Length: 475
Image (tube, rainbow, N blue to C red):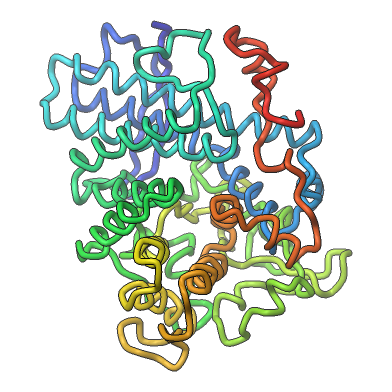
């Protein structure tokens, strides 16, 4: 085995919970023996996921939406005709980061059980955490690239590895998550580590992707019934900073987030990508690489009384006074472009409710009372209403059949998760991308745009792949 260099500073809750490891070179012969050593190796799985590559990945997904537009090097995504050389290189960075995280997870999964000074309970906990994170990376890879090499703890030293089918990848993801669900704790000692309920949430999302609606509903319902999570009440636009703000440590709504703090090399890059200097909402200005426009049908059809709509500011940076820039992730005290304190939410309780609503309706073939109530909880919060009581903004069950209700859930999810990297993946999953992009942007999507290109480096250095036949269509 090649030596593994482990050296990172990883923040799991706040400055008080700083976990620091000095850089060191280790091999399997003298490492992975104690709980502390295995925990350090687990921390290395997070490093690629917290990198600039991965926050830029979220921004790239947002450019693929019906409401988002890219500026500068991101502008070419607006065409929905595939990628130019610049953006081919960008998404190659995402691929490499996901596979680096998978590699680090494979090392833990292979070596932790062989430790001579670690309890079986700690082995189960850390291996399950590694399996959760490996499944998370594969879930992003398979949805964006399709058939991919399936690197595991058994074959990770094999450079020559053919692609596995999407079905094989999903089977592998489910196996990892079912084991993680069994062995992860209900509560973690350190914030930012996955729990049993994070595994259930990711399982629900994977089952929804696969059209296994009964299983998706069941897993989401288990999270809902646990009483461990809930929505954060909102009364004004500024109250959203109680969820997304840079000083938030955690909330009941947090299911799984990547944790960041205002420290050199430990902050979040995404707020700099989204913000504009004129708003003074980000202390280092911002590159405003992703934006929207008030003339877009998505925005025009959005009710003014929805507080989420007011997370947009009009900023004219040369494209007209209808240009919109988000204020969802802001930090007026960030210490650098790469160093905002905002956490990056990957799963929130609002998504659990909406997964449940969609899955329950699809399973039953009609919207159910429970599905409508889950949807209405998210909707009420957006209008500053009491979360648990009927309100004037509630949707009414009798007004919707299955198809109309699914459209309603997807629209609510689009409003709720703007700039969190969900919309494009939902549009692809439901085969609504062409319809929705045409409706809101007037653009027809080229087939090449649905899957990202496999990196040239993978095709060149993996002898099992033939560039002529294994590259995704159009590249």
